[in-house]
Length: 287
Image 1: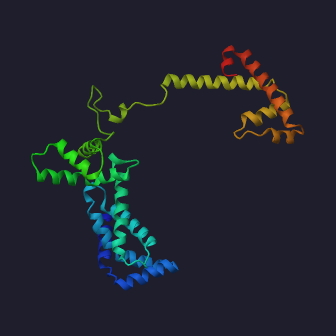
Image 2: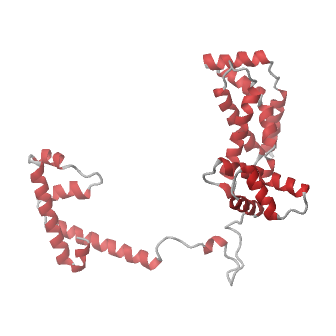
């Protein structure tokens, strides 16, 4: 109820805003463009809010809240105000109409479940014109088959017949909630979501991986005890740290050449392999 009241108040304010004369509109646009006068920009925007509301009303049938459509249209209106060039001999309402419509359409495409994701301009035209063209063709010739209607729409919009058929099927279908109860088998109280296949490992695999991982950590900790202090420092810095140190950095820290660091590291790795294989021959695959 509060949202409805806010919407009505916004519409009332927008409808009460005075129209701008051509010269007044030009002067305000110049102040915004040349002097970054935000008050002038806001005055232009408020004077054209009735245009936003009118265009948003044309997209009511897509099932999205009118207030959201108006907000998105207002975003397009502000974008138009930011790009408008007053020196061009064109009224702001003419220029802003494209930006308002584009902003509302993009919002619908982002939020309608059947068209989420990347959408080409051809797909966008198909989405917004399919039902209108189909109804128009059906009224004009009642003998047309659905296949013929799809072919004419594909030709009119410059898209493939398969795209028209796919979009028509999606627009004709209803979204199914994953929280809807499932009536298959004996699991009448379960939801459809409960029957989705998970990509996670099976429970026995998870336990097995956890046990194996813990075992390997124990073996590694035991193998590291075979290293001397300098070898341990190099392996820790080079192999066990999240950001491995360079040979030059360790050489400077230990007062030796980077080649000597490499030799010590290689020898330490051999010690670790031998210790791991001695603990369990199967570790040779990981060593």
